[in-house]
Image (cartoon, rainbow, N blue to C red; front, side, top):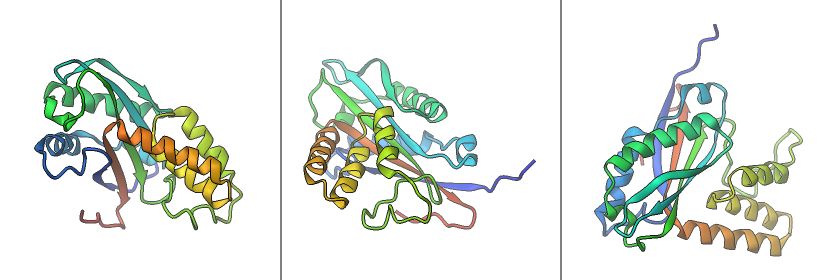
Length: 202
């Protein structure tokens, strides 16, 4: 059997609540997530990455109700996030909402990225200049179809539209990205690094 290269993982958090300085609620939630969420080995071995978004309904006291709705095309990644969320739910505290209204529905986004291959590259000026012919718009459209509530995906497509001069479409996607980001409790990025790469300090 082919020996798999070992991978290191780094988790970091962006988005609403995750960078809050004045509340220990989101920080405590993200600490729990960082200790529990894993990048599934079989997904890393296949050089796969992707987004998982949970839609969570809160009761009037600020606690999650029922099962979250999952938006993702990656079954193994979805399973891992549901496993992690079940642990988080057992230790849930209303302060995790960081002042958001109770009795509402919110989003939690998890972005799995590998250091090489499969990830959405950030720089809109260089991300699409590859030797291979790839229909990047089709890739982004498919990703949004599979996960229509990821603020990051709309931002990525907005950057692409901006790059090709489709300014109105770009504005629409940036507006949608901002709207969804405002509905997020947190946005978690899980990065897998190969053995030749050393984890970056945060």
